[in-house]
Image 1 (cartoon, one colour):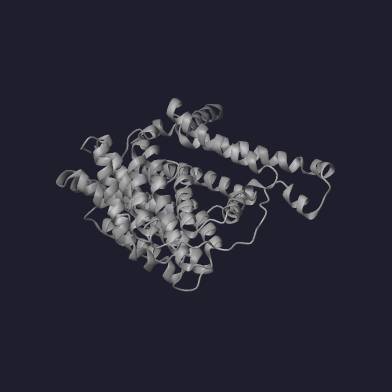
Image 2 (image 1 turned 120 degrees about the vertical axis):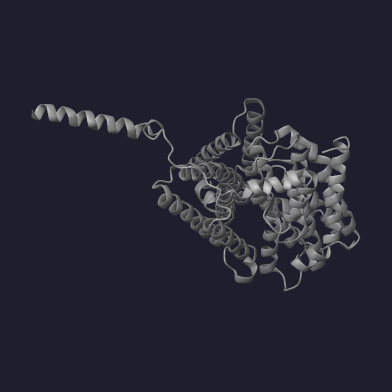
Length: 482
């Protein structure tokens, strides 16, 4: 009898193990349904928390609180409320967990992509590459007007392969150093770099969060982004040409410096170019997710850092050691460079994407999609969405639109990508590059000097002209239709 009972227990244990290992089989019947909670207390609570969280995040400069804090807290509160409601109503919230995990997966790819991009930037900074660029510009004795255009064009080109928020910080630093004695130049060049970074980042999925989302969700293929090249150039050139006449023709006086590149700097640049080339080509020809190529590049960078560190002792025997040669021959720690990424921005996007995912689950995005893309013209809707990115993060807006699943032709996706990418240039709070440059100026310029919110607002008509000029350009490129 004991043997028989033991056999039954073994069978029960085996059956339970199978159920646990095969959750889809064990819970084949989904006892919950997705409800439309727009007019329920949970929906009202989610909207209220979203508004408060965004209001706190957008006024970061006033209260000096990291913008990530309210967004992460807000997303947690909203999802907790949804989980509690479904658990109380149905006794389980399995489908809620599935939706939460789906949004988390989308964020994970963005997280890794930005982390790898910023790690490469930090490594190049540590190797002295960008300091060498600054010194090279200073040593050539360019006039302020020439520097205005050079820094703008560099911001435009760099944002094709580096996140525009990172380009804004980098170019802001260079502009500040080479023009600190001329606050007016610093302000105009800083504004020009912000507009250029946003415009350049719109052409490439590698340069902006909103463009990355479009690429990630296969709304546009990589090659299709090239259609935006001329409209984005127009967007940059129109305000830059107007600001050009406000920049002095004088030439700043610089003390001559000798750029010092640390060992391996050129090979780091090669690995950087190789990484983005592999990412693009593997996506275009193999349909491989972008993050696969980026992680391969990070692995190559780690092995190269290991090589530099291990070969450091050998270089001491080959080169007579001085303090300068000792510093320039040292290797670097990739994990220290990873630790230096902008965690505030990464956590902000976690909160923003999870909030958008929750609002979509509650039914708000479907209602917005019906109004925007059915009751009014999709063209008008996409332009209005682009204009709204002057005060709301464009990555969050693009993620929201993608979650609406609108049935748009390629021309409308191109229009939306363009307006969201360059619309953030209209106000200083509308884009990550502008916010980074504002923060940089606040700590290094006298109050009211350099690049400020007021300066940006004063030049907004010129930027708005460039915004609509780029839309008209895209309209003609598409043969008079969107």
